[in-house]
Image (cartoon, one colour):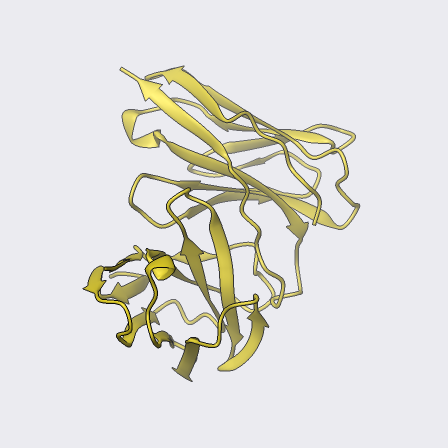
Length: 113
Length: 113
């Protein structure tokens, strides 16, 4: 799986958009970008994933650059409950249920009142 | 309804004891996992089971033995507990072929004294 690079920490004002960057310059053509988050003392939570098109769901939006070497997770209106560690993971998607998910250090997002 | 549940939530025991952690998922998933998160917050996969068959065993000591009585359950038995086993253990599950989208349990905090 391709390696990812994320800033160790970020702050965001409550109600504003939180933009979390991730670099994955060695991503392969069949690798997807996945995002998880882990709120303090809870299990990780799957957020969203994408291959090359931008994706949106009820939790967040995922913007992937055209060259696929970086991506941004956007929380449109951050709340205090969004304070968590956010993990960007690159791995082969689709069939391949035997493959593991490797979590890095992630970005600690602090939402400030 | 809890999707992935673990029992117990907290486990305090002495060195040398044997203990088990239970995990159940009601999502109808075929694949289940065990992860260990140490004090530095690194989340590492330990095991993966697919339809009761062991798929991934990530260099885990033989003292750790997962058991899957059916595809909805994956229990973790630990023999001869050591201080270094103290950590939070997370169970997760996913649909077959969708290992990137895993659903995690709340975790079991194991403290070995």
